[in-house]
Length: 276
Ligand code: 8IG
Image (cartoon, helix red, strand yellow):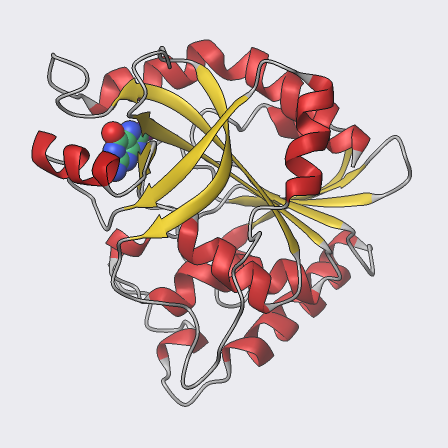
């Protein structure tokens, strides 16, 4: 369903101004003027919010300008302000708008632009995804080392050229490996979805250098870099990608694998956040 009151749906609107407005509303509602770090928690990662610090405010995302209603079970539509043990402030975004929802790429990256407007210098993007490497059993967390954007679009508008070398911060990946030396990494392919890939598409992704298949993150990472943030990405492999796994993919199984892995990966992410 289209939310006709969303200012981002007006082509004449400036998405960065809408993000500024959203950040001002977050400051007002949380009582926190600036956030230092932002996290988008995808499926399987939500529990991390409880572990990284003390939640000082929770806001339904729909109360903040530009945000959309969550489309899907397993996706919480809230924004939380969290006080970290270090004294830093984290903004946790539990409301992701996916490209496949057809609300346009401005709405997909609004949370990231809002995070930047709140002052966040680090953007942590997490997701549930399919794995191409057969050694990644469901429940394996993987660092994102780079991405291949297969959406055929960009959050950048007009002749805006943004360098994406080292988009997924080497510094932060190295830091994550000081917490868990076993963390593997891979290249994330963002497909449009909402269908999962065919086995042939998974083979294509593998051939062009991909290791992880999903429906989020790449567009958000581009927007985060445009806004000057340092990006850290992690995928929870909830299933092997189609054709790698021999049985059909079911959304219920994906949700179950996420739930089972959640305590472990949430604790891991909390430790990484504490070290940033
Ligand atoms: I969870 O296998 C999850 N999300 N595109 N493919 C794509 N997205 C996913 C998958 C998958 N698993």
